[in-house]
Length: 113
Image (cartoon, rainbow, N blue to C red):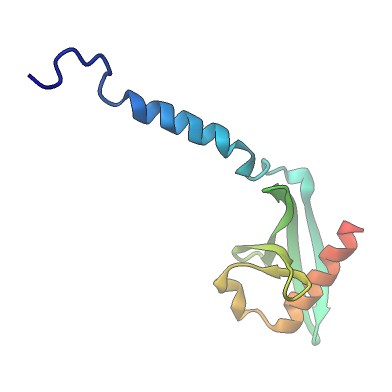
């Protein structure tokens, strides 16, 4: 009879593996969101006014920012080594004018200094 005498309960290896996985990647979670980290800016780009909301956070030991324009959806900005500037990493932000993204980068760079 196969399986007779096996003392490993079904499903226990999965629990151990998930605990090990959680321990291995514990530092990969974004820092908790804090309202006191949120900053609002008024930017005028190409004669168009924008209200920008930013909130800094750390992910994988990297400084990132939640960014919202005029109360819209949040986008994540992070350093792009190819562009050598902070830029949105999601495709939805591609609808923003390039000049707006550059202005946001400039403002965030001032925060990092």
